[in-house]
Length: 138
Image (cartoon, rainbow, N blue to C red):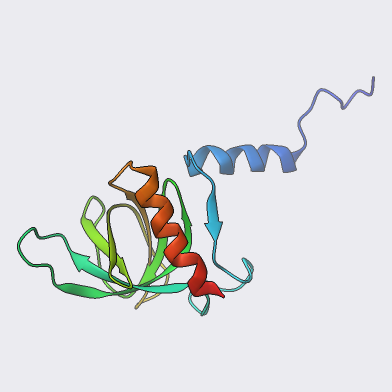
């Protein structure tokens, strides 16, 4: 046994720290071509409409670009200012799903990154949304 075997390397401790901050329960499919590219300059992903949650008549809040998607939720970039806890519809080709904004991060003066989780727990609906996004990548 080496005298340094009992110590954890700095690389391992950093990875553990990052994983504990993520708090994701599901894997997300990244739509980014390169994770190294500056998020503000990334032109990859799928464009969707953001609609206000209103039972009578919904109106368009703006557009967003999906950067990652999975069973737990979706990651978006948008110029639309939304608040943590706000519920909005994501619309792609007429298919809508309600999400709740869980994370907000300012990218620059015009763009925000939003982490949102699906309100519906119906796996078939979530799979349908993921399937709507995937063909748009081809």
